[in-house]
Amino acid sequence: MAINKHMQAALRLLSYPAAADLEKVYKIERALYTLKSSPLSPLYHLWDQKIESIDGTPIRVRIYTPKQQTSSQLLLFFHGGGWVFESVDTYNQVCKALAKATGCRIASVEYRRAPEFPFPVGLEDCYAAAKAIYANPEQFGVQPEDITLIGDSAGGNLTAAVSLLARDRGDFTVSQQILIYPATAADHSESSPFPSVHENGEGYLLTSYRVQEFMRLYAGQDDSAFTNPYFAPLLMKDLSHQPRTLVITAEFDPLRDEGEAYAAALSRAGAQVYLHRMPDALHGFISLPARFVQVQRAHALIAKFLGVDTVCADNTNRTGTGWTTQLKFSRRRFTGRTPRSSD
Image (cartoon, rainbow, N blue to C red; front, side, top):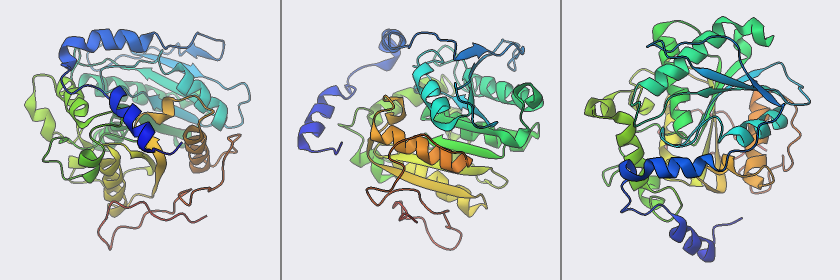
């Protein structure tokens, strides 16, 4: 659905109020998110492997297996929610739909959330889960190279940070990652260099003010987090030896340009990167029901990136912004524009 003037007026009414103090209301909003959790089903189970985070806290991993498993690949999923909201439970439908669309198993990580557990606790939880799964791939019938990291929004941030940590710590090698409208930068204020923060920072559900609040709670009392590249991966000076990457951004999202800038930076550093800007899409669209065209297109893009057959509808390029070519930014400056489709 196109964002016409009537839709935009409705979105303004639904957008997070700038006056709301997230630190005071996050528990209420978190409870409201929990109400949308889909019921349990035989489609998934908990992995019985004991995983402990860096401080010894046990980490749960939920496994989703599609009824028709057509691929032996495993997607290691980190959910979004601003590091504050959402959970494995509230992402049941997202993971079930992704498993069905790709034919792959999904492993969804229950990492600890801010503000109770600020940076880097959630990141260390995700890293511990990834380390355990990469160390025991035979339990899933895969090789390490068959594992793909994937996350949306805050989960996209965690995905990128886990890939960087894996390179720097040397515990395992990430071969592929999928970043869906990821948070990669630290500044979403009026001084942000990204046009999308200013163009889409109000009136499109997620506001730039709310992004700043999310990051403040994720950082906790440590202001130095805002200069830490594992907190904001776009700050990483050395992005070499990063995995093959698919980045999907949303047209009307304040995080759009920083996601595309991270794709460009990875490409300049030598990674094989594919970028797609989803037209007429808002931040968080992957959580919509699978009947929405943006979700279907995202599933098709992910399936194509993984090299698996897809059962998604609308696999064609209707709008001229379908599957994009590999980014090649090593000899030219990234402009922030979406590459033309090769279809």
